[in-house]
Every structure is written in C-alpha cells, then in structure tokens.
Amino acid sequence: MPSKGRPLRIALLAHEFLISSAQRIEHYEIAAYGVARTFAEKLDQIAAADLLQETLNEEGMTDQHLTRLALRKINAEAVAV
Ligand SMILES: [Fe+2]
Image (cartoon, rainbow, N blue to C red; front, side, top):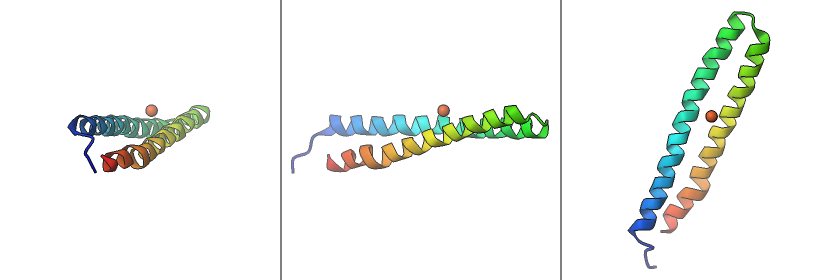
C-alpha cells in the first residue's frame, strides 16, 4: 500500500497536538472550577456553587468529546497513512 507521505503524517500529528493542547486547557479549567465550587460551598454560596458545578460538568463533557475525537477519528486516520 503506497504511503500518503510525510506531509499528511505531519498534518495528522499536528491535529493530535492541537487536541492534546485543548485537553490540557480543559484539565486546567476543571481544576480551577472545582476549587472555586468548593470555596463557594464553604462560604455557603450555594447558587454560585451550583453554577460553578454546571460549568465544571460542561468542561468535563468537552474533555470527553476531545478524547473521543482523538481516539476514534484522528488516530484511525494516522494508522491508515
Ligand atoms: Fe473549556
């Protein structure tokens, strides 16, 4: 099977790098929102804690989407090269 070449492999690696970079940002946000939610709870700011938890849940879902994207689409394309 002929190789699609080095430029395509480099492009696929660039996509994986971008996804992993986005995931690092999501993990940072998860840590920050988790701490902020806990502080809000300790200060009896329940409405704020609830909003921060919603945001924390959204960040977690984004991280999961990025993981699925990396594992299913990009990695499969990299193997096919
Ligand atoms: Fe985010």
